[in-house]
Every structure is written in C-alpha cells, then in structure tokens.
Image 1 (cartoon, rainbow, N blue to C red):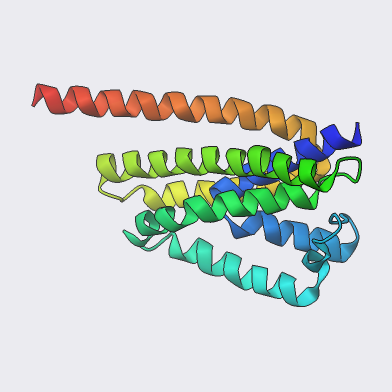
Image 2: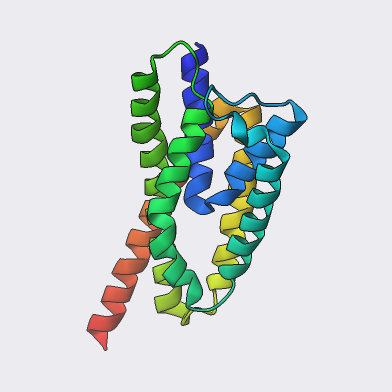
Length: 193
C-alpha cells in the first residue's frame, strides 16, 4: 500500500513538474525542512536550507521568465527534458523502501518522467495555440495558470495524492481535447481564407 501511495504522490508531483520544473521541488524542500515530508534515501539533500533557497531563487526566475514574450516559447524547449528529469527526481524522492533500487528508479523514470513529459508537452501545445491565435497576448494568462497549477498540484500531492492522480488524468484528457479542437478550428479557419 505504501508503494501505491508513493507512486500517487510521485505522479502528482511529476505532473506539477510538467507545469513548472522548480515549483514541486521547492514545495518538497519546504515540506522536508518543516518535517512534513521525508525524502527517500539518497535525496535527503532536499531538506537542506541552502537547497531550499536555491530552489526558491530558481522558481522565481523560472516563473518570471515565462512572462517575457517569446522567451516563454524558447523556455519550453529547455523545460521539456528538464521537466522529465525533475519528474523522475520527484517520484524517486517519494518512493518507498519496499521496492529495490532498480525498481524504484525504473518506476520513477517511467511514471515520473513520463507524467512530467506528457504534461509538459500539453503545456507546450497550449502555449503554441495561444501564440498562434492571440499573437502571444494570452501567454501571460497561460503562464499564470501553469505556475498556480504547479503550486496547487504540488501541495495537494503531499496531502491527498489519490485525488490528485484522478484530477491529473482528467486534466490531461481535457487538455488534449482542447488542443485538438483549437488546432482543427485553426485549420478550418485557414482553409476558408
């Protein structure tokens, strides 16, 4: 049961990494410092105050950079592999001692990295649609939603992980349908011109 709960927490944190790379790591670090969360063996560095400060600075810089026009689109190129690494680390940090090291890392890479990558690809698609349809004017609204989503998902992942997994699955399905609908609307609008 502990393994399943750990994977649920990992999925929620990994999904949050898909929105913003550093927000979930910062939340985990704050929770580890305050004693609300104990990272798995080998990732105890999350509980170091210096790491928390560095993650805080990185989080502020990442959030601010997404409000700069065109920089947000460039950051998506860098953020995709970074989100997958952060998702893997987040899932590994909550893995239980019941699994072997190999199984822990394998599930962290597959579940954590895969979830973070899927959510990040969705945010890239949403930003592309936003840029194409509004010339980038709506991108700050998208950025605000992403960092708020990352913060809320991160906190809720540590509090109600099973609920977060259900919400993440629903959100990914909704996002995929929304992007598909927008793309077909753009294709239809271009062909009628």
